Amino acid sequence: MGKFQKYIDEAIADLKERYGKDVEYLVNETETSFVVITVEGFNKLKARQKSMLLGTRKVRR
Image (cartoon, rainbow, N blue to C red):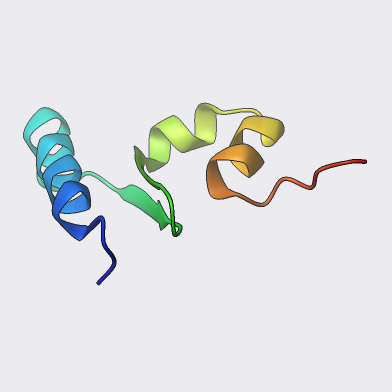
């Protein structure tokens, strides 16, 4: 469990309340942030937005 677990659990509870208990969701936690998003919402994002959300975007220098 990470340091954001309390907030992640709250976000998941909110998603289940809003979309029903069978909602599918993704969780990504880093040292400084976390993201909880529905799978449907994630699939609507563009590739660049997805990579930024997951922290996999490469920075060009």
